[in-house]
Image (cartoon, rainbow, N blue to C red; front, side):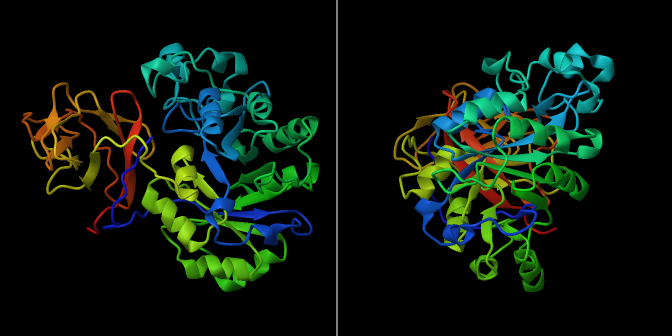
Length: 419
């Protein structure tokens, strides 16, 4: 993986949730040991696995995250109709499986309306790339076995209203596997942490396993001093968005005795920002890159010379108007022509691939604008012909650039200009 460093220009802002890590009873011992600014002491948390290089929340993505050096695996727990625990982010199966083909009349149904056997029939990999065809939605137990002794786990009780009893069922499974306390890994992360936006579900879980750290999702900014002080009476940490905080905010959390966790950050600039602010854990979709930035290593070991120069998510007029749709500009930073035919880009969520046609070569020091909408191709402009806008033009996003070998060559973050 490579990512070319650049000046910030405009940093990213995003509407990302924050999390407050809590335990029932006294704070977990040793929390103060994680407070500090030394990057090498910061565990990398793989958000849905290595979710930009494999289909999110599949065994492949989690296995890749471990290979890339992630110290913690993060995932979203839901309950099937027959009471089995699986890992899936969305309320429905539409975005990340072929449910529309297999169960067309039930495609928009909630995950909890399908049995495990039915979900096992679905392809959870092809949406990411055809090479991942046949990947399945994993059970929590599969990932417990995969990670055991290799990484910590951070599990979210996802939409418990759609999965009644999910908290109690998860507690029983974790206890069966010995995840019933506040033990830490050798990297300083908790071996298990459970979080949710649903306070009722968290209380349900805590009644079953009161010693396991739990996390309550709040807002993206760092809470005020009074709230931090109150949280410090019964919590061990706070998750916040580095794009919405400053070093002063993180210091306030530390002064209250809380450990600071970042919301997902992916570009070198965002990762550096989180480390410079003093965050104690890095949550990311690109664990290898995060580990390299954290360790002070070159974030672009396979540099080829093409970077995302800028993004125009909100052109004048309709975002998808012919010839002038939203676009991503690639720049050749070398003094030689570079062939980018067959390369592609993804939005921050990893949902859509934006392709570059075969035979496209960027001259030295020059730009290629990759439009999402329709238009006439030229040496400086390539049009994908999509009809629906993809780039976030309200708050900002992250764009990932891949070569023909599916290696990430650049990660670029942008802030959408105010309207």
